[in-house]
Image (tube, rainbow, N blue to C red; front, side):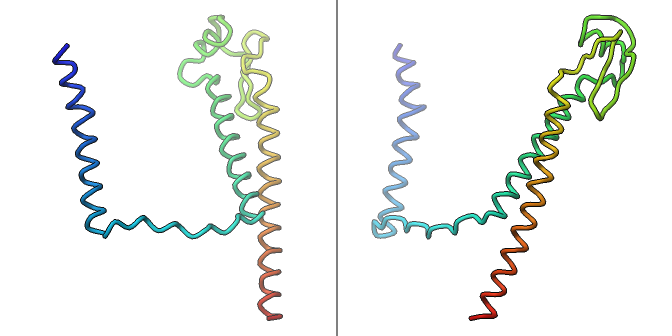
Length: 149
């Protein structure tokens, strides 16, 4: 028990004491000043928000497509049916877009993968177009303000 307590003191107490001592030395060198606050950030523009939304939709769509492709037969086609449905047979058909794997008339890929891909693709394209339109409008508005001033 004494060894455990000694180990805890060495593992937790000694680094904490060293850190507190180091901070004290640093503050003593600086004259005990507090750190300066950061200036406030500019608010995000609507174009940047739409671009972030587009990026997230592209990323989620790619992840969902990779998930759907994980059902596809690559090296051993009969194993795709075995792991998906429990049938040791070659797939009847398979395709990457729309994601589909059919084994003896049974669709192996979950039903929600393709509608999810469609929703994410439409969202990504719409957000990209929105971001571009808002950025062009913002730059034109800024140019008009500069000309008028």
